[in-house]
Structures are given as C-alpha cells and as structure tokens.
Image (cartoon, rainbow, N blue to C red; front, side, top):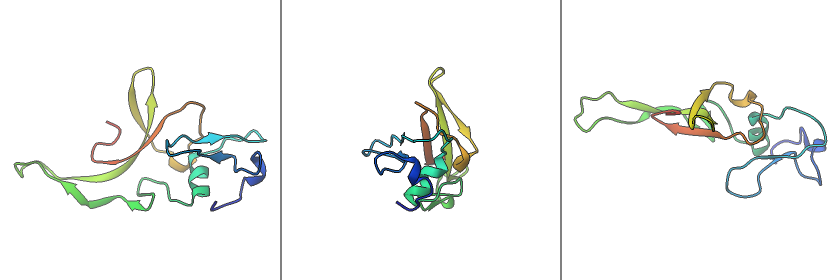
Length: 118
C-alpha cells in the first residue's frame, strides 16, 4: 500500500479500493459515499497513470513499426484510456485519466498500442 489517504474509509482493515486476483477487477467497498477515481487506485498501488506514462512505461516514439514495404508511415506506441460501451460494443477514448470516477460494472481498458481504442 503506497498511501493510507482513504484507509479509514475501508472495511475490515482493507483499503476501499482493491483487487482480489489477477483479473484486473477493481472493487470498491467503503464506509463513506465518495467518488473514488482510477487515480486513487493507482495511487494506493504506487504506479503512475497518464497518457505519457502508465505503469512506468512511457509514451515512446522509439517503439514503432513500419509497413513491410517501407513506404507506410511509422506509428509510435502510445497510451489510451478506453471505456467500453456495452450497447454498441465499441470502446471510446477518455482524457480524464486519474480524475475518472469509477462506476459500477464499467469496463476501462488501458492500452499501450499504435491503434488506441480502435
């Protein structure tokens, strides 16, 4: 635990934002009504979160690929935060990163790629 900022809000000595396994599901169990954010989760985890650096992997133009013919433009790898729209089945980008309030049953995808939320 990298911070104890909201520790008193949790139940049974547990921080109010936590995971139980490697699925990536973030659970929120709190004594108080609060809009916890994705940034709060990353803060307790002790990892950076943002379009230029997430999980200590920076946006980098040096990691790129070009088309096989060599004539296609090269594309950098970059971070995107995508929210899954279950109705349309598509993901759409968000720019609020650490300020994004977590919502029940929401699917957030952090992607380090050349295609973004596509």
